[in-house]
Image 1 (cartoon, rainbow, N blue to C red):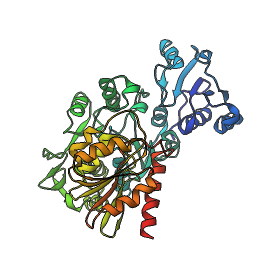
Image 2: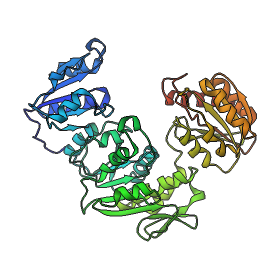
Image 3: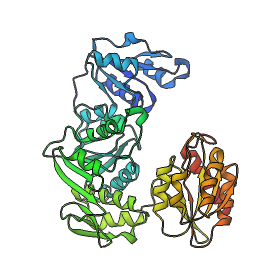
Image 4: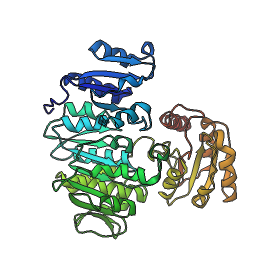
Length: 450
């Protein structure tokens, strides 16, 4: 860990706990800061806050007094999910107090170079691919950010021989000041989190902050096929490494005659990849560029792409069951994510979809249900999805629960089909998280196979 003295003896406010706030508060305390922690959960219900209080931090729980923000503060470290129209944040900004997220702290203390990965879709898959590829090369990878451990916690143990592979959200990137990845990866931009950012321009600008501190030593890996991404990297400093499934680059990565080609060398044919879909080819090209930069042999890169089964709940290959390929895509909590999954398969699909009713309709799914010969819908949205599916000519079954949906979907399927859970809805009508929903799906598959 780098020696950092800028916080010693300084007043710092950590706003919001959870894992990232707790890790940030502990780090700042150990760096000699006078740490005040503010969290909405009452102290008697707040184990993390009580632990920080016993450490020596000042803890204020259950309320958010504006008096916590004053000119004497060196900075505020906020939970990424806290919006910038929060009264405490607005007051801090009016007083020109820096408001950062814990990834900024991670950069300040890390001895290891950082690979920062962001984008609207594919972050977790690409981050995991990069980690797996680097594990076969000369540098030791450490995974951090939205996947794995909190970044500033990982950074404390990172050395110059390591590489921090860090998944970054737009929320986290809004709170950086000096953060500079050695390699920055921008995968794609679609409208997302507009309730937080206000509009699509502000959202894209937040993603583009990944490159705001880059210089001539930096590497910029970006999706050439995405016009918003191209615009965001136009003024960025560093060595630009594009990837594309449409264009060919001698320096960069592309899909050429069916082969994934990196810096002019063919890695493998797309049909050899274990993960289906053009979106996963894009993720693979981005990951292969990063791995090549860190000296990973192309045979090792190819080996990872042939064997990678996906990230749990994200178009995860579960198993082959009596000739059916089973995929768990519980992370598809919206319609575009389900469309992306359906586009990934050439073979017939039996789709399980449904979940929380947010008031929207599902008509935009219709064009992508042409290759779907069976749809089983469940939950609060079952009737809405059923209406759209019936108009496409698919066989449709409505049930109440996911547990009922899985065996019905299997009955509809034939040998050679894909059986796909891709709900197009949030999970909260029946489950606490999409992870719980995906686990239930896989457990139901195991019952069929038992």
